[in-house]
Length: 248
Ligand code: XBP
Ligand code: MG
Image 1 (cartoon, protein in one colour):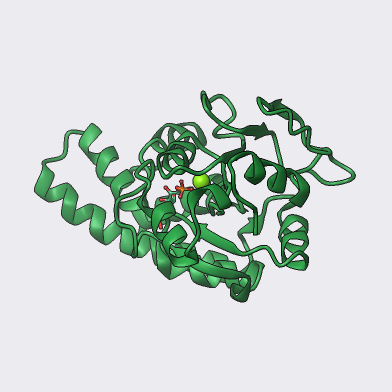
Image 2 (cartoon, rainbow, N blue to C red):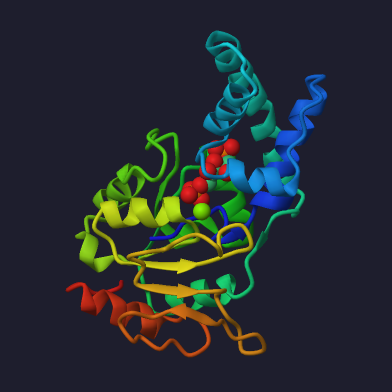
């Protein structure tokens, strides 16, 4: 069960953040989210909720900010979708190799994201091919954003699998909490925005997916899975076996 933003793709700092800022600029607003501020704003999942929370911090009345967040987010979604279609959003290193390995072993894959359907489908299709994913749950199908478990629960339902059979891969504390609340084992692959978070309860924490020339460092391995410098099928299978299920 795979997360998208920050996990399969490096999409936040140079993707969503840039798109939010362009939408602000087009709307004639002076607000700009720098790299550091955006890291704090990521605590609020979902782009529209994030804009709303930001303007709430600025003291904007609720009615005004609801309307503004809706229109800014609609434009931000168009801008981000265009960026993705131009190839500006890339997979994290090692992700394509992992997905290829899982596909060769006929492991069933699902996506559980709080991102918007408008860009999630085209982006996954362009980078990996949509046919790889048996279920794709976005905020359109699961409007309660992570850490709510509904995206993971719905994806499990669509796969018709018990939680024990489908380890999750996430990059953030909100993602870990969502996966755990749905009963899934969870591997966290941190990135620059999330590496300082407290991933209490994670089943494995890596600093990347790992590649032969750039192995991933293991940051926590409570079950002694001892991955071989990368997140691989064998490690995911052993994690699923621990939970009483089977990966794939
Ligand atoms: C990702 C998000 C998303 C993106 C923006 O969380 O919170 O909102 O930041 O996408 P996760 P939208 O990786 O835990 O799913 O603007 O389309 O909401
Ligand atoms: Mg994420």
